[in-house]
Length: 155
Image 1 (cartoon, rainbow, N blue to C red):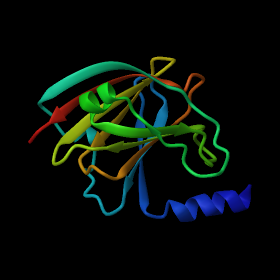
Image 2 (cartoon, rainbow, N blue to C red; image 1 turned 180 degrees about the horizontal axis):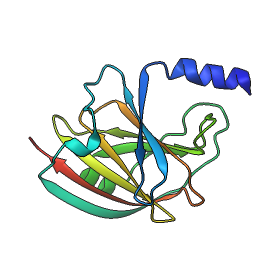
Image 3 (cartoon, rainbow, N blue to C red; image 1 turned 90 degrees about the vertical axis):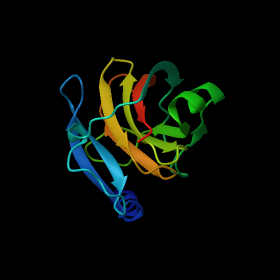
Image 4 (tube, rainbow, N blue to C red; image 1 turned 45 degrees about the vertical axis):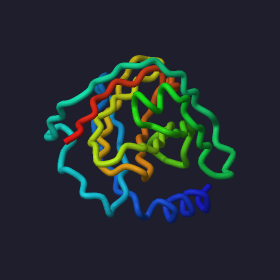
């Protein structure tokens, strides 16, 4: 296990993690590529634009260690949210049981997402640099993502 954790940490050296609190008061964290210009706090960014609230079914899978289990989104989800693929799996982490990775295909928009799991807990993620993965790690007894709320700020 120690070797796997070291390999995972090496693969994630380019990711900076920030802790946040979920809608139900649980700690979770979001990961950004270090080269991104990250705002100091997701709460300080006020977005205005087109909002959405859609139902999805993104089941959590157990990782086999053969890489991130990416899945393409359907055309409706991609058009509405800008998310073209996702992965929801158990990462090698001593603190968090589940990781949601997303890839967003919008250009020059800022998108604020809230991902809701089966327990109806919500995890906020602000995306302002698209075409690179973004990460959310959390603990949940019902990790499958069931709904996404968001707002797209076209600047």
